[in-house]
Amino acid sequence: MAQQKPNIVLFFVDDMGWADLGFRNPVFETPNIDKLKKEGMSFERAYISTPTCSPSRASLLTGKEPVRFQMVRHIPEGKAYNFDENGRTQEEFHLWEKDPVQMPSRNWLPLSEITYAERLKQYGYYNMFIGKWHLGSEAYHPIKQGFDAQIGASNFGHPKSYYQPFFKQNNPLADSSDGSYLTDVLTEKTQDFIADYKESKPFMLTLWYYTVHGPHIGRKDLVEKFKARGLEGKYAEYAAMVAAMDESIGKIRQSLVDKGIADNTVILFLSDQGGYFTNSPLSGGKTGGNTLGEGGARVPLLMYYPGVTKPNSETSVPVQSIDLYPTLIEIASGKKCEDKQINGVSLMPLVKGKKLKSRNLYFFRSYEDQYAAVISGDWKLVKYHSGRYDLFNIAKDISEKNNLYGTNQKEESKLKSELANWEKSVVVQ
Image 1 (cartoon, rainbow, N blue to C red):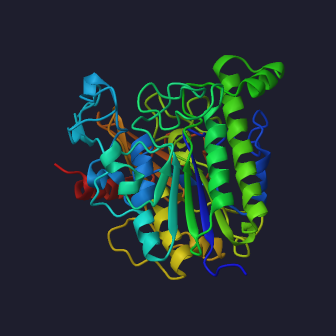
Image 2: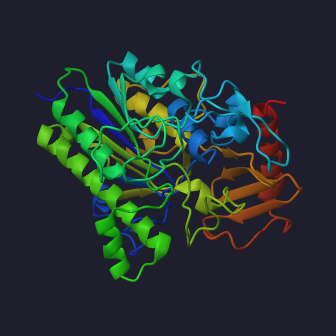
Image 3: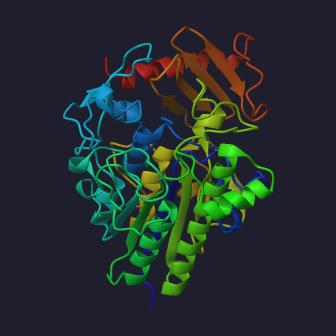
């Protein structure tokens, strides 16, 4: 007999471009993700509130805009930022050399922040974490933030290699065999967890992949496959990484079927920011000074809730990573999330074919001249420290080629004012 509450599996991919899926770009092979899209709902305009590694994870875990707790950049490593060789530091904040305003950013997610794992535990869930953490060293690892167990979490933001040894120091998967591929190892660990799970309570499985973040090292058999198709260099490696990740999702979903729980398991899939390579037709990406462009801030987001999501459905309503927290709470509790400390809203109304209350989405990161943005429906305003503004109608101009700022658009002054007021309310002076 199936348990009443559904299990939940959250796939979170690192640096996966919005366009880098088979159903959007035939260069890539993602049959399992394509199948997930056909079965569930695609949020066509999903965004990360602070699109970069650590803050993206923090926004997902807490349902809060990371700037509110002063995490505006990824957590660095190395002596230059006072981290030791094991990825640890005693300093709570760091500065970024090229940041024009020298804003401090946190080196770990404070334990005082409430995570979705902590809240789901209150609703009777077992929380398993597998993969990349990048929210602090051991004292701040997943098992300190509400998760019951963790596998593969390191103190580093990316591996040394996707082939063993994966990390130079404190390799959390050191027992993996020589020649093993990191994505496959995490997949096998996840499959083992599902097969061996004997608790009577439902589980929330959080799998945060290290892939497709650099170093771009694809699985050798897949690299050869894409090179034979004409892809070259790092792009062939990247395509192979995407394919291996897609294989992983297929295998894990098959494990749910084998366990007999697939029909009572919610699947979520998203990325932490835009891709390193081309994000066409979107502008910008992970690097290059335009990360708040659609190519850097917009990410794939898919949800499959058996018996609830309408197959092959889509929504163009703008949503954000902060919305996953209240969505998970609603799935787990069967009731609307009433948490007061969060900024996100549940996506369940959209899933059920209803509307969300109109709202603005805000963005903030502190690396370069471009640093803040606001989205209101079809409109997007981007702000720079140098005084520059960009204004785009995303519905009509997905590639952000036509800057409408200064052309007497009625949205211009309204969004400038709203962004300035939000900035004053969230930025610690």
